[in-house]
Amino acid sequence: MPELEVTIGGRPFTVSCQPGEEHFLRSAAGMLDAEATPLVAQLGRLPEARMLLMAGLMLADKTAAVEDEIRTLRARLAELEARPVATRDVAVIPPQVTETLAEIAARAEAMAARVEEQLKA
Image 1 (cartoon, rainbow, N blue to C red):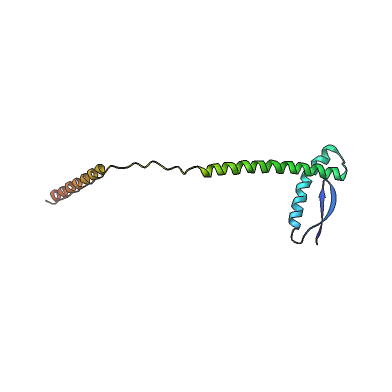
Image 2 (cartoon, rainbow, N blue to C red):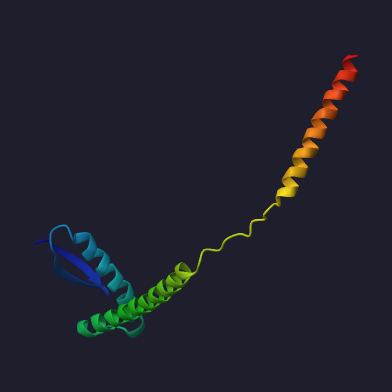
């Protein structure tokens, strides 16, 4: 079982972990150290247990805030997913318009043909 030395609040700790989990242990220790270091800077030297307790509580508070935000976002997402998909109003073209346009096109083609004949003559 690998043993790592991590520093939290300026103090070294030797911690064991499962093989392959060293990265996760270092990451977790880094998070704990990020909370403990300002505590030590503000309050001075604290007993080890108190420093770790306070740093752990600060991390737990941040975790609770993130979990609340995740719950809120999941509820909002579920609300958005439950909404019916908006459909666009599609204009329905009456058949008379289509027929009229076809008739105009036919007349234009006939006029163009007549103009071509006159130009050839």
